Image 1: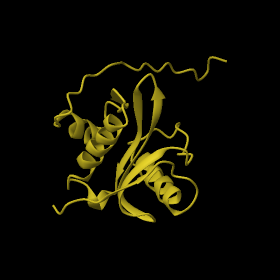
Image 2: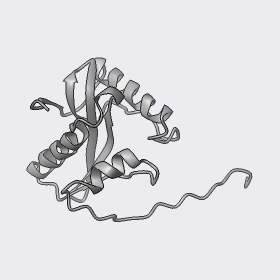
Image 3: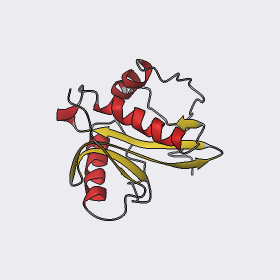
Image 4: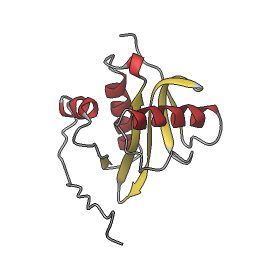
Length: 143
């Protein structure tokens, strides 16, 4: 794999990058990798991406979660670009930038059946430790 060139946006803002991120986000939702209950990216997140602004091969959005923590909001790699190390490199770049800015922890959630992301994280050298368990209680029909 050739060396990846990362582009950093402290805030995504409006425009072609946000449009491309929303498109990738929708693709991930359609594939069942991100819940459809989650709101679209707003443009206020920081972003690291690979490729062009209007059609990134992959991107990671993240933000300051307080208490020395960064929340990795979305990590997405286009289907035709997967299994080339882009996701792993994006995760490492977010971690590098966050550590360089003085943050102590990088947090994110992964659905139990999102094997692509779980494999990427669990096979890495990130020193991961599951820190929480999420419970969902179905409230339909309880009103």
